[in-house]
Image 1 (spheres, one colour):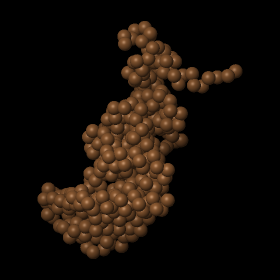
Image 2: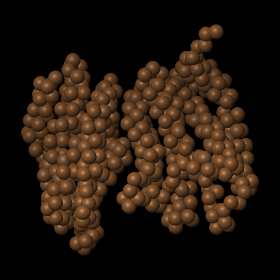
Image 3: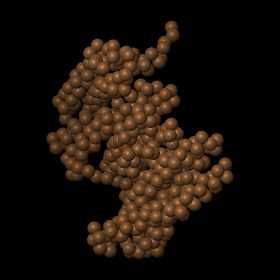
Image 4: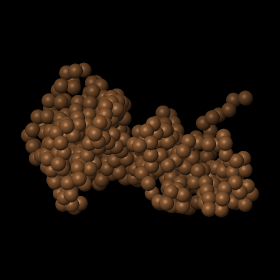
Length: 223
Length: 247
């Protein structure tokens, strides 16, 4: 079982490394969104600080959203997915490995670049730390939940926009607690532990339940 | 006596039966709506001052909000039955419920906006219950969007069923969204259910309106399901023999 996980993970990472533009596009999408936001709303320092958590999180949401379309698409087109479904290995493990690879390629870079947002929005070191921590806990949930949408809309025309309509409402709790933690950390004497615990709980729940839904959706899509 | 529970799971048996039921449900929906609104508007004691008369929107707002959640649960119920037993009709029911559920969700948000304008001074506030109800509307829309985006009926039904199951998390969120431990962090403008202390006439008028909405929901859902049956079963023999239907 663990070998399957490692094999799929290694395969997906290798494939992605051969086509680096895909990863870089998502990454720069995030950077560009957070960079042009102040151009629209003005450069007032206090306001930017207040808006930073929300903007960074919305940008992360959208970035992971546009990357989702590719999660199963190429495997679906060249028939690899069918072979995976036919193999006697547990589909849930395969799904988990694919989602984990997807997160390493699109979620983790966002966590690592978050300090740039801190710089642009005048956040202190502690606040940047909290932001990175919430993104670290939150972006895997985005990938896990999004995988359901990606599997449901597999091979449909206009699938990308459809994923957003299906999945964005479900992202709301993560957005609230992720951005909420950073906002709370800006107030003096506040404690963000509750937010982090809740995000962690969401992550565990998502890890447990979403692979089932994704696996079922994949079977329906390739019937 | 042996009852055949699955007799009406065949569209050919279900179609004529609901056709007969629709007028009854429509009749009850109209009569009970008129009765309930009359009771609520004119036959409730004036316990509040004149400025507070706007509370009477409760007779639409609360039943609509209940319906939005109930219909979602019923829709998921049919979707699950469809996934388990693989019955065509269950999926048709689920698909027929979604637009009505979305309509009630919208109605509760819309009437809530007017209520909010008069009592809180704002059409919209990011109160947890309003926000989660809005998300429920988006989930309904996502369900319908997915269903209509897939051309293959079977796949559309099953995919939408899975999505509706995932969206089920919204119901407890809406239900518990008034429990706010710290008012400074999440001010909730809605309060807990107070059906215990409410004036009897107001409560009854509200319940009559709820039954009226249920009757209406049954009527339009049955109408819609009949249309879906006509569309999907148009190649079958029983339908082509049906009087009034030209294949």
